[in-house]
Image (cartoon, rainbow, N blue to C red; front, side, top):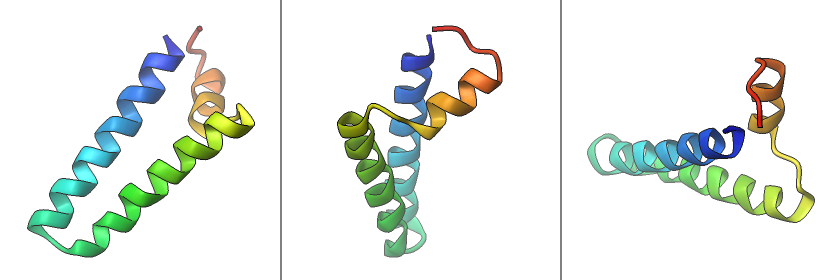
Length: 61
């Protein structure tokens, strides 16, 4: 369950930042870049902050 939530949140952040970049300011693309870099870091180190936060909130695997 945690894995699906992490993916849904990351995907939502990227889509929202892309919409904000189109309609508000292109600097929102930096947020999408940050999320993508965080996903890459997570795949290498096998550690994700969102996973830790969800675990502390009591969400089960």
